[in-house]
Image 1 (tube, rainbow, N blue to C red):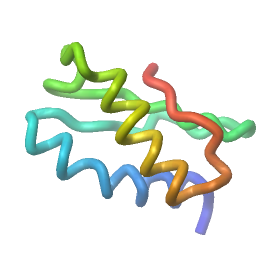
Image 2 (cartoon, rainbow, N blue to C red; image 1 turned 135 degrees about the vertical axis):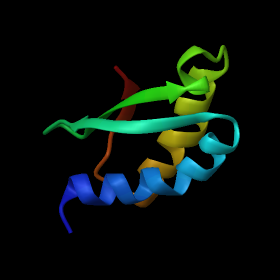
Image 3 (tube, rainbow, N blue to C red; image 1 turned 90 degrees about the horizontal axis):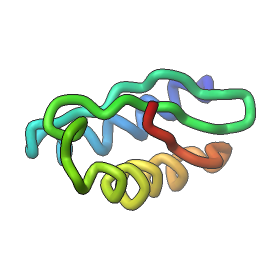
Image 4 (spheres, rainbow, N blue to C red; image 1 turned 135 degrees about the horizontal axis):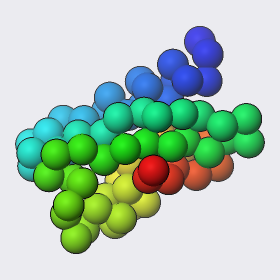
Length: 75
């Protein structure tokens, strides 16, 4: 499985929680140095807790599932 596919599979594990609150996450890119770029959508795009969700939730799960990932950033 390709790195991008692994990241997408990991993001799918977070989508249920995000969608329950009216949001979502879209994979934009995976850089060669292991940085995952995502776009927070819906309620997540304007939520004041979005960065906590990104780092404490999405990034944690993605790094756990795909050890090659160094970080997850919103773009």
